[in-house]
Length: 182
Image 1: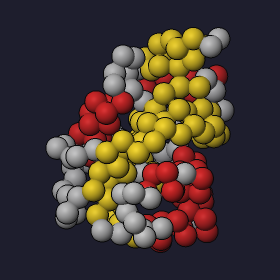
Image 2 (image 1 turned 135 degrees about the horizontal axis):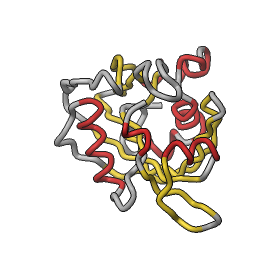
Image 3 (image 1 turned 135 degrees about the vertical axis):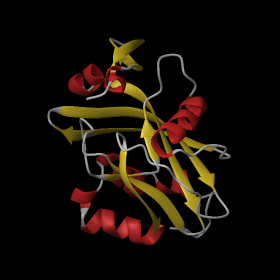
């Protein structure tokens, strides 16, 4: 477990947005703020496999980047920070797509109850990555249709939130960014 696992994140406690330890938010299933990013090239999406040292969902495939903003951090600033910290990616043109909410059991008695700001970046070529091994064990560019199919036929390989995004929120996330992608 890293120091980052004890970051104070914005969560609602008794109806008030409050800085809360990230582990507490997950243990108590508190509704909290989050950010997700999808980097797209042609009909492919860059996904990451979470490092085995992560305290929940280790070794599972997720979208390009997903995280929690620090207390007082703007969502887009958070998205840029974590793209750099997790994958060594910077300088992308992030486009805000939508805000979605979900609640999912992520194992080990932990719950993600997130209000997520979602960003999409479209790139002209497959950009280089430099995954931080404490965060990411692998990356892959996957055809969107293949990813949708794999999350349905082999759900155990993917994080609950990626499955939820693709099943329940794909039109909100991808419709304008990639006409005809899904």
